[in-house]
Length: 173
Image 1 (cartoon, rainbow, N blue to C red):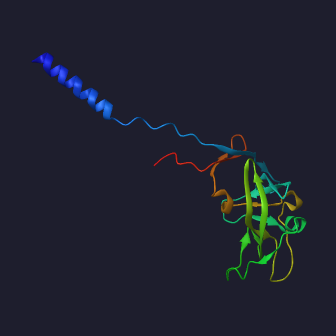
Image 2 (image 1 turned 180 degrees about the horizontal axis):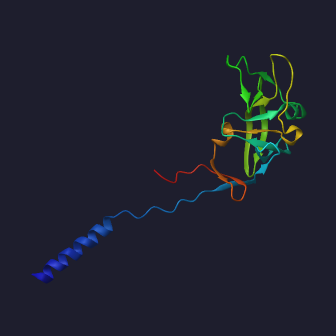
Image 3 (image 1 turned 120 degrees about the vertical axis):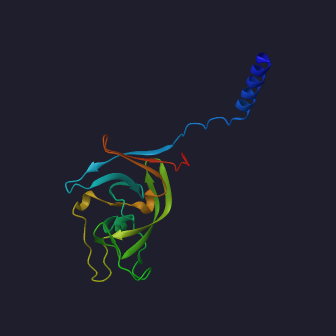
């Protein structure tokens, strides 16, 4: 009887093991960019972003919209639209007025290529027709905000001063 019970238990354990799901494959993220973060004299961080074939330092923010500066919008001859008619609120991007919108035809962040990206023009003020600049001046060409960063899985690696962008993954519940 003992031998028969042991054989039944062994057979039951093998059947349970055969019905057990295989463990999931380890999560593999595909890196699209590993960007050097540079601290500006103001303490704010920038990363390289290529717009219209030219590389610029873009301020990094987790506080909303992406933008190009007035100088970059002018250099690229981007068609501007009034942003105040888009929504009755007044917009600001990292403290600068943003009264205009543009569609940037070509944006490259590492290996991540995007086309026809809507951005504000930081520093454009439709109310008094004056243009203002970031405190960093010409060292900055725009702002990389959550309107773009939300398209990626993002890692800020402050130990190595890298901003890493990955294809959006589903590595978890």
